[in-house]
Image (cartoon, rainbow, N blue to C red):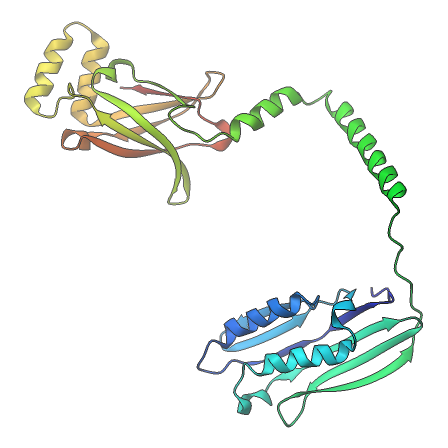
Length: 302
């Protein structure tokens, strides 16, 4: 509901029509809406095919940026809008735009219509109105009192909620989640794979809309890149079951990456293809992760 505050102005209505088949008029409409928005005149721009509409925001705004004659300032801005259209098309644009500006005891009404000359014409009238003076700004003392009151309320809310919320743990969690995930902040346990490869870099990224850890994995000189080398590595493992299973995983070309949170609790596991290391010194591989269960440790298993 319009409160008729003195020194304010409000718009109502819309401007609509069709875009010309050529040119960048749609972009010019958006630029115009941004320009008049700096004067306090808000319009929402809607483009549907070759049709457009500019719907005015009806909320009252200070009129001081439009002085000395708000209605004339608005008309000049509207004429600037029409200049984006070829003259023959301007008379095909329809306007129901109107404004109401308020001074003590008065309402200055204006209607903006497009005339036969392709320019906006104003019809104005002034009527008596029950207006209200703008609220006086708070004094420094009142602002201080309001701030102290708000601080007291905040302290009371925190004191009561502390019964149910562990704020220490919450702040710690927020602090850790703000740190980027990297090889320095994420422990990597390679187990029996440590002889054959290493994770040299960890970063985050989004792949097909899924948040992922992107691991850079490099092979060591001991990595078996041929079938003969795999046989030799398997024989060298002897009776060490874990090393033998690691070599078998290399032969298959897959390892499993397990994720654990900072408390050491298991979060998830994903199968990772490392077969390209047979022919390439390093590779980048991605595994999904959840920000709610931020990984603090990665472990490679068979």
